[in-house]
Length: 88
Image (tube, rainbow, N blue to C red):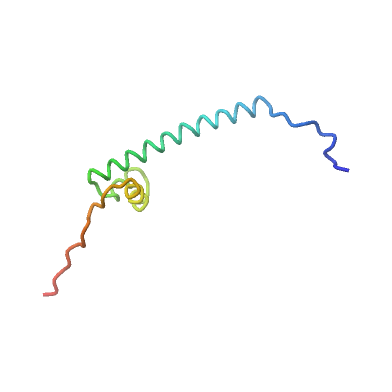
């Protein structure tokens, strides 16, 4: 026989439900702020600005900044090979 057979059905407390509601609301605010920051980063890189500079400002790796910009269709800052040094 199951040892939990005598345990009444679970009903969450008001305190738990309130905490969960507050968390869900804070998470929604966080997600909205994160999307706003992503869009601002994309717009900044499109100016054009170096992804490394934008990344330093927001605390993100430049590769992440480049990926966001690429996914948004922002052209690369440099679309050609850098000049090579001559050997003379």
